[in-house]
Image 1 (cartoon, rainbow, N blue to C red):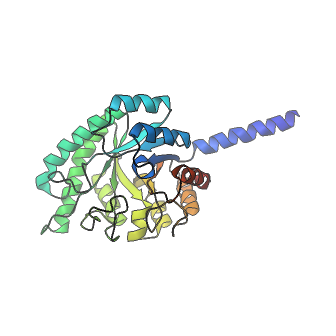
Image 2: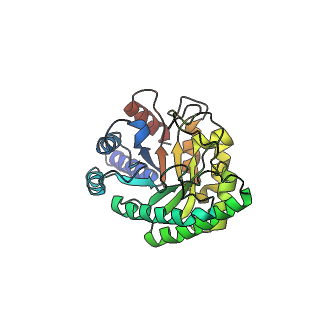
Image 3: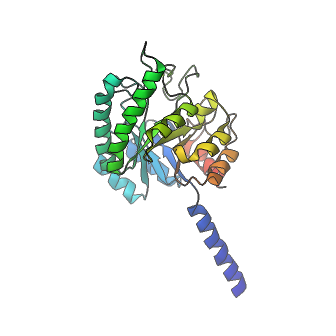
Amino acid sequence: MRRRLFLQSAAITALAKAQSRSFRLSVRVEPLFPGLSLEKQIARVAEAGYHGFEFGNWREPDAAAITKLKNQLRLECVCIVGNRSVNPKGMGLCDPAERQGFLAEFGASLEAARRFETTRLVVLSGFKVPGMPREKERASIIEGLKHAGEMSARAGVSIIVEVINTLAEIEPLNPRGDNHANYYLDRTTEAFDIMRAVQNPFVKVLFDFYHVQIMEGNLIETLRKNIGLIGHFHVADVPGRHEPGTGEINFRNIFRAIHESGFRDYVGMEYIPTTDAMRTLVDVKALAAI
C-alpha cells in the first residue's frame, strides 16, 4: 500500500513539474467570443481552464474593473495591442517622419499596460510607404524599435512584433476591411534579422502560425532555429483562420515542437471557431497537452 501511494505521489509530482516546464495557453477573446462584453469574454476564458486572455483595443474598457476581475479569476492579461491599427496613420514604423507619432502612441500603450497589469505589447510594422526604398523602411523600423525597446525595458514590458501575411485575399478577422496586402513585415526571415539588429531582449517576434503558413510554411524548423527571438505564438489553422484540426496545419506536432524547444511563455488562441467556441477550446487544450 505504501509503495502504491509513493508511486502515485511521485507520478503526481512528476506531472506537476512537467506542466510547470511547458508553455501556457491564452485566448484572444474577440474572435472566439464576438458580441460579448470583455468581462464576459474573460469569464469564458477562465471557464475553459486557460491561463490568460488577450485583447486588442485598450482604450475603451475600464482598466480597474478588468484588472480586478482577472485577479479574481486568477488569469493573466497576456497582451494588448500597442498600435491603433494594422496601419496606424501618422504613427507607423516604416516612415521616419512618423516616428514621434509612433513613440507617443507607444508611450500611451505602455501606460495602459501598467493599468491592465500586462507585460507584453503587440506592435505592428504598418504598411509600406509609397515610393520609399525597402532598405530605408527597414532602417526606420529598426530605429523605431530601438527607441521603443528602451522605453519598454524601463517599464518591464516586452514588445512582440507581429508578422502578417500579404497573400490571403481576405483577412478573416476583418473580412470587410483591407487584406493587409501592403503590410511591410510579412516574412519571418526579415523579422528575425530585425530583432538581431535591435539587440534588445525586450523586443521579440510574434509568430502567428496562420500568417507564417500562408507565406512560408516550414513552421517547425523555423521556430526551432529562432526560438530565442520568439516572444509569443498565435494559433489558427489554414485556410480560414479557424480552430486547429480544420485545415492543413498539424498542430499536435506544432505543440510538441514548441514544448521541446524550451519555450515556456504563452501560446495564444486567435482563431474563428466553426462550432461552439468552448468546445473548441477544450479540444485544443487536449491537443496541446503534450
